[in-house]
Image (cartoon, rainbow, N blue to C red):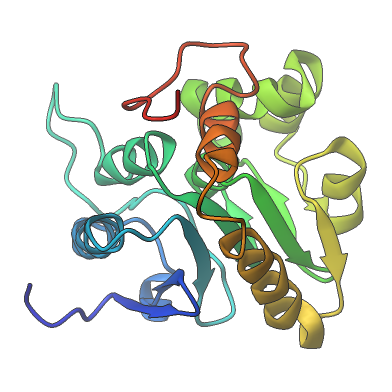
Length: 224
């Protein structure tokens, strides 16, 4: 694989750490970032990694889709490929959100079983205010917080503070920014320490990918 320039990736203590590292593009899901992130994911999976940690550099966690990319009829945006990769992943993902997460970034975060967020970070779905209805993002949010709240979030474009995201169940932990990565790493390492002689971690991952059995499982099922 060529040297990555839009992400960082390494395995530490059995955890695959994937860092979105294109802060000059606000970590939007550009084709370059998506290609590199998927390549890193596949390397993790091929090496037997079962738990991943997703984080980002710069002041913005992710601005979501790449608004500068040329749209080709019939071809989904690059970010869709990354979201689908995470949503069918054999890896159980923990996310550490340090700044704004916008639009399609929330769809990506919905694929992560655990989300830790800094108390000064926030979520927003602004597409409706610009004449577009972000159907996949709303559907992904609705699975977690319910259809009415998801629709309101999308149609108002309001910022959702970290504490509100916690109250609604979009995140698991709200912590001071200085504690974000330590908390996320603690959670990821605890999951990675699950007894490898059992299939408990794989079953937990399958449960989340099926959103605890409310929809068909995405990706191959291996735990029986």
